[in-house]
Image (tube, rainbow, N blue to C red):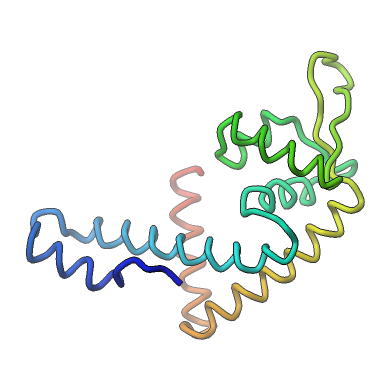
Length: 165
């Protein structure tokens, strides 16, 4: 997966060379960060078959999860996905070139355009989601039991809910 040191090796080096930086919170943060990296890489591997990046996939998923006509403003998209407006512009341009989205006039604000999922975009989002979910299952269940996976999910959902994010 990654050429980075295994986390336990990196933490051991920190314990020896910078012990005051190792704490429960440091270990928690580094564990979540490393897990996020592994999940992102796993998703990226699955998405290659669809010609999608993780960012493009997130846009398609955000639009697919909306009620018809499955559209959002670019501002709502970049705020909901924690992307910069410049990064979002690049993603939207590529998705539009691939006919996965269209840009349409805003109903009330003629200065802006809405981003709408095309039928092709909906189909690609659904197919890619199936692949990503299968990859996630393989990754998780090779390493965790179903109960452990559910406990991890419950704990993480609890934390993000309490943080309001």
